[in-house]
Length: 291
Ligand code: NAD
Image 1 (cartoon, helix red, strand yellow):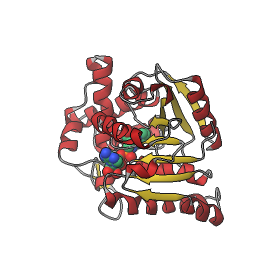
Image 2 (cartoon, protein in one colour):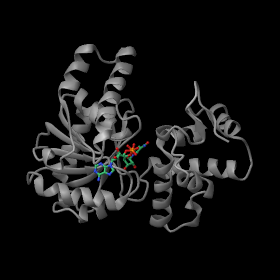
Image 3 (cartoon, helix red, strand yellow):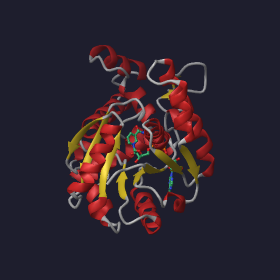
Image 4 (cartoon, helix red, strand yellow):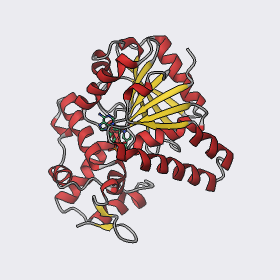
């Protein structure tokens, strides 16, 4: 099967980035969100991401015009009915994802392939609630999706070879590097990355160091481009907490318990960059530690 049209569900941080990557690679993209107010900033963020790529010499103005012309938005799931491929990138809440697939599939063609950008939920379990488990797989982009080269390809237990090969070919057309990972909580990247972030939050919680000292330790001591708390704010603290909870539930090991301070920040609505405040406060000229 050849993929030409792509429906992206969820127009947040990842959905807008994924829509951008597909539109730049020549696919026709329809982006949807339950919240109509999310769509205008999503298109603005696609334009801004492409402007950054133009500034770094990777694409030109004609590419931007073409990509924006190939991108449309809607709040009606039925408008995704002609899509060859669906990429679900809505909030990391399993019941929300199940509901989306249940509402979406009646509008789709029989051959449409379903994928989820979930960071931590079982692909096999999500596939099981759809009417086409053999045409379902995990497609985990990294953040920011337009520029990060890696995509994790996650095969559910029922995923057919044809589905896998079709999606693998799409990732090559995006110019990205695929790794194949098994359907276990967190897959590979988050299985390793999110417990490290959680440990950094524990270090802050226990007073081992300040926000800046913890981040600088990993930036200058381990050569990480961002400190773990800065990275947590970038990912979104709600997403980090959700992934940590999935690791604990899915692997049944107490070493994956989310730090109470991470829970508290999420309860306060301090979700990181997207809410203006997390471990850093982003509302001034430049970020400062929030506590
Ligand atoms: P986000 O909070 O920025 O955006 C989520 C979007 O989903 C919001 O715009 C929200 O309105 C929308 N939404 C909620 N319910 C919906 C519904 N029923 N139908 C349509 N849209 C709905 O979150 P995000 O960071 O973009 O994460 C999205 C997905 O990508 C999650 O599964 C997350 O685990 C995954 N992911 C996130 C990162 C990251 O670094 N943030 C990296 C890789 C994968």
